[in-house]
Length: 111
Length: 113
Image 1 (tube, chains in turn purple, yellow):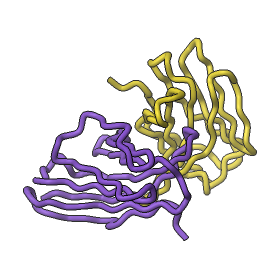
Image 2 (tube, rainbow over the protein chains, first blue to last red):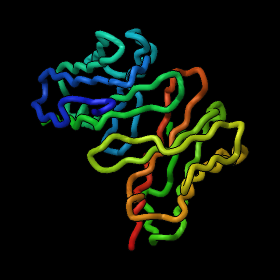
Image 3 (cartoon, each protein chain N blue to C red):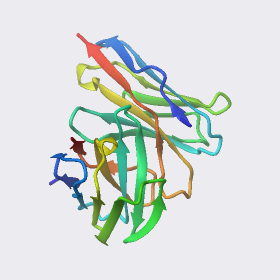
């Protein structure tokens, strides 16, 4: 009965490949996010969607494209993967308040 | 430009004692602050928050103190328990910015027996 679930949890792939990470929340929240935690442990926001509409788009390469088919889902597609994309990607959701509910994270390793 | 800083990467405390985790911020526009707790291979989970109109918020064993003039907040855990061993992230945000939180790099707390 996971509130925010992401798949896959682990992803190992070669440079240049395209990959997707999926996120679903069953909390009924209006807003969903993607955060990236890099090797230095910085947890930084990448994107945020509110009711399927993009509201936050930080300085992220165009190779990253979020898609929200409905307010319960927010997927992240990454094209032409680079070594520097290796990180843990966290999906999160919220409802109005600043409190975020995070998924377990998806560890991406680019070889 | 690290707007939220946790200068202690790790902290070790004996069970039963007080744990004090510190956080500094630079952006005076931040008006709410949160602490998250993270276990290995799990996502961060919300612990406690405080808005800038308060200087203290308490929830059971956890208390957050905010010193706006010093741009400093701290999390006190009393008494510390082994299950509190985790990484603690401080986060800050501005009202009306769609919950865009800025996180610190975390402090790993180890509570020893």
